[in-house]
Length: 432
Image (cartoon, rainbow, N blue to C red):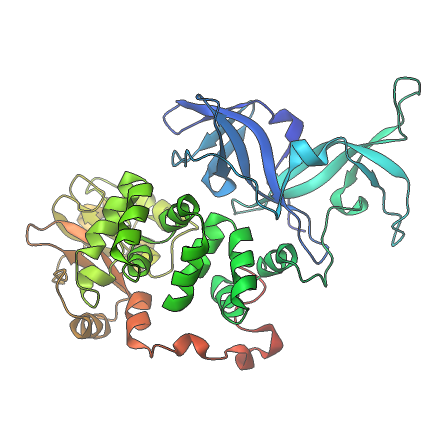
């Protein structure tokens, strides 16, 4: 296993305050949410249960946690205030793991000495925001008021039985754990070939971010079927987690009253982006674009730009360039000044201002540019992403080559079996 970058015992997180980037308290940690996995892999930490000021308990994904420091947790500031509801595939670490009677594993012997779990250590994986259970702090013997307490010791997660799933189980919990090792496109392919009943069970068990990634890779009929079987508030959460252009494409397939109801349930900022995309024709630059490219102000440096490009959640197409605009720097922005390509960022010193190396020669795309012209533009200039700018000169978003390909390929292109390229394991399996 790779070197540990950060480890913390969960008892030290109980009750600690959670702050946003501005230093304002969001709430306090009340528990951690874990998912058991197959294949001898340690349970993964999905997020935190946070009690906010109103005493409501909400779910904070670990992907929204930027720091677990001494006595506090720092978030990205993006918090969903809907009430936390535990799913069948989820386990509460403080509520279900602590004080649990389990057995130590002696080699391959599952009938080792019985112990009590007193605490659980979690570690952050290097260069990622993922966290998983690392160690258990256990006590031998049964203890109790009339007995001497047994010896305590810290053991590896693999030395304790009862915290993993059967490799060959076929329930929704096992399928979700198995799918965790696949790329979203491979999970989508597997979901597509399940029965509608099993597909709904697995979709209900996936966390919001994972389901959003998978929905983006599914055919429209499957998307509509799955989103229609989710509770409306959950459906709105998943739409918020999707890229705005993909969420707009999905909503455009729904009846008008269903679409409007889901938009009303979404956070206002997310809904505004989706509504803006829905106002454009589907096969135009405005209908194809994402509203969340990397936007920097003229006084940003190359170092600032590279820090933004390194963000894990960005697609390669969006990370290939940054767009320099005057304030405001969220779309629709102030005046669009030009583009800086990733290769140029690598060639200039970190302190260089992006405004001094901006490429302003290429004319950006108007939002009503039809798909064939968008395709020709990307091909002619060897680009994987292109800016979309309105008549006033504001950047509205960016069209990426993957979105263009989605609309150029045949409707049934997702039916293509890609496993022959890499044998039975399939394309991209084994990591994200």
